Length: 471
Image (tube, rainbow, N blue to C red; front, side, top):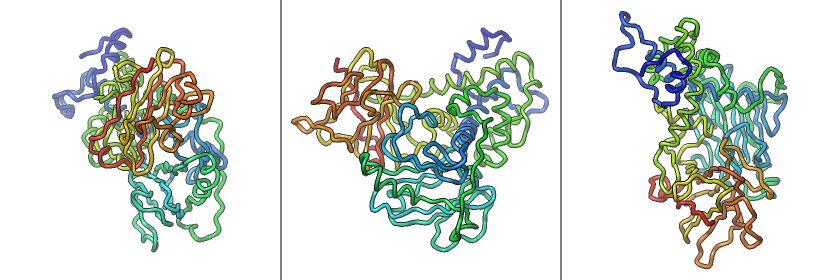
């Protein structure tokens, strides 16, 4: 499809949701430069390809713009310990969980490695996944993989080849920017305020050169020039020339993978590749107008991708998260919908925006019930939960401040041993309140989290039942 240089044709082109794709013609023939339409396809490819890296950088800026560690953020190489559950005012990360306390740290491995100390969690479930700058999980220390005894890890950046100290396990990051998105199981408010808080305080990061010595963490610098708006919103609003040039700079310290060579050979024709400069003015006015609309197209396209994926019983189950390879569209979609997704073996996240009748949820029109037959609740080696989100994927305000419900709640069983979860905006009454997940007075979506899922979840033989309208 070729673009006409009018705004209407640009909008129609964007709204068509045609996926980024290369044409059969050889882009690398010096005698035949790309057409305008091919340049636009390349811009789409480049935008989708770079989306996770840009999202990670903007998230890093927001979450490290603090003078000292707090529950909201911490300076680079320091841990922000969120020792209470997020609520409807939390918007630093989309789809936050209400099952664990977070231990979050943005790592800069440019100068030297960092030592990560993990205490004895006394058998408690935890995981401390380390993500590279492209959102791949490069390691996932935790109960499932490394046990719950005290542990020492050395997190190194690309090119570090010195000797690893004894008793330390090396984690090699392919990028200088990395993110530790730690989670520790919390069973109830008292448990979180005592046992879990002590565990959280014993997660420690120290530069290797200072390990074993008295060390005072340096103060961060609060930069008033950094926007603290939600990262997703910031990326949506970023002009395309700023986006591509930021991507070019980020790829210098966070190098693409060998498997990315093919796409980068193509996008280099735009001026998008490590260290290059993207110059919007070099293109025709019609192409410039189309380039400026690429962020709008991307937002719609990623939503379209999610909507087109197959659902079973109204549930979408993305698999293969945390290890993306060249699945650039999946990687971008997850970065937008839930930055920091775990490996499948650590957690599976079925999500649902429609009931068993394939109708969109709407708390202003219906009440709903999620029913688990006896012995058919989510199979988890650790635990499971169901979380309510609005259509922007943030938590929903409600009268009892309950944002999720699961097997750590005092769920009442029916006489036959089955469990009903009541999903509605109004309190269902004293007898049912223990099983109530409050909904908004309007559209919503649900995420079921299954931590350390059992094999029947991983192989797909267990699927969540459909959510039924009860009124």
